[in-house]
Every structure is written in C-alpha cells, then in structure tokens.
Length: 169
Image 1: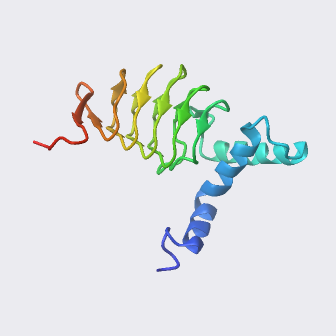
Image 2: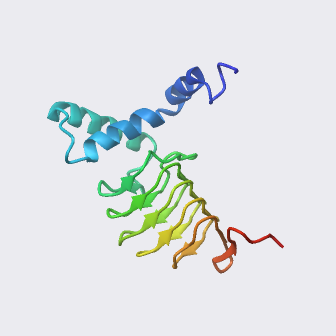
Image 3: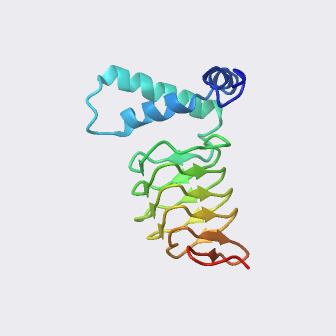
C-alpha cells in the first residue's frame, strides 16, 4: 500500500497535520469529556476539552456545529467533510459505522439511528424517528417517519424506494 495514501497510517498522520483534525484522537477525547462516568483526571479532561474546542474553532464549528454531549454514538462517525454544520440533538442514539455528510441535522426527541447508515448532505431527521440498519438517506431529505432496515430514502418527497427482498425497477 502506498504510504501516502489516506488509508495508510502515515497518510492519515500527514492529513491530520494539514487539516488540523485527527479523527481518532478527536472522537476518543470527546468520549472521555462527554461521559459522566469516566474517571479520567479533571485536568486531563480539561485539556481534552481544550483540544476539542481548538479543533472546532479551526474548522469554524462554533458557527453552526453542535454535537451534543447527550448524544450516544456506537462508534465515532465518519465525517467526510469534517464536522461542518452538523447538528445532533442531546438524546439521540446513533449506531456503529455511520457516515454523516455536511449540514445534517438530527433533532432531539428520541431519534434512533441504526448501524451502517449514510446520511447525505443536508438531510434532516425529525424527532421520534427510528432509522433501521443499512439505510441510505439522500441529500436534503427530511425524514418524518420510521425507515425500515436496508432502505434508501430520496427526494423530492422522501419515500422508501428499496426494501430488502424487493427488486429495483
């Protein structure tokens, strides 16, 4: 594998220096700071909070990004465009291996998102919605009802176009 590929560890280190954003470090430190049961030293938690806020400020996250402390992430989400304009409510439960593009809003109010979900740019998830596993939500969709597993949701009116066991076309 090419050492300068972003899939290679050296490539990720170089990219983190350039972008001032180390994905693994950011999400590990966020987990320590936001977990009230974590027994990490207070000074270390404050340093981690400083690191998070410094990274957020560099990427202008203080202007429109809010990953609330009460939101539970199964694993740290993949953010292809960094945390640009992403809003996550405080009582949201998000599964593992999720991809969240820019300008996504996940409103508070009991939202549950399954594993292996892709949320397209500008998607809006309204309160009391349950999104199943392996779901793809298209760009600018406003999701107002539950989405079953293995579905794809697109505009103009968000609708389910593919369910497991059905053929396309």
